[in-house]
Length: 142
Image 1 (cartoon, rainbow, N blue to C red):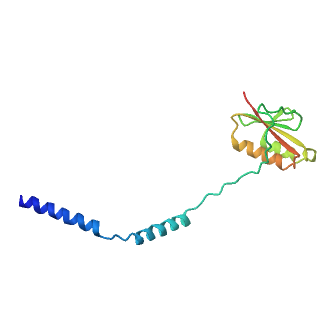
Image 2: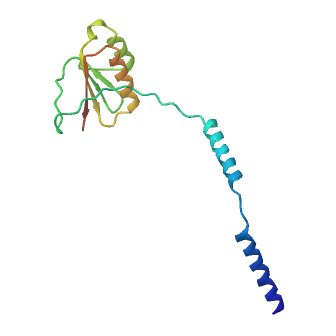
Image 3: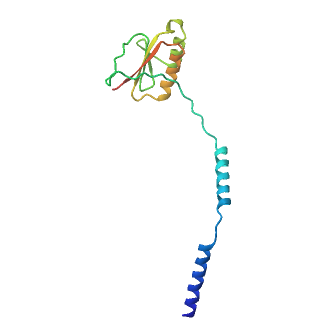
């Protein structure tokens, strides 16, 4: 019993010392703060390129119909491009849109639902180079 009593006394003394000791955490907080600042400065933040689009709120939930004219571009799911009732590729579209007859017009871009976003962005940037009056975007659901 004497050994058991001694071990209990030691535990009690040790726990009392822990409760009475004043732990100063200021230096630990300083080190953590410095590490946080160092991490924030060392991390490379990725820049994201964006396209400015001025979108107008729709007047009705059903949407409006687009008048299909010769200045309509269709982007199909397989990546093909329809322009003037024929199928062309991106380089042919680029050559066509630099012509003066396509400058300052109203454009319609009809996109099928599962078109890759990159294809849409490339065509939109080509159309924006023609200084369009407006660009109407339509989504074709199959």
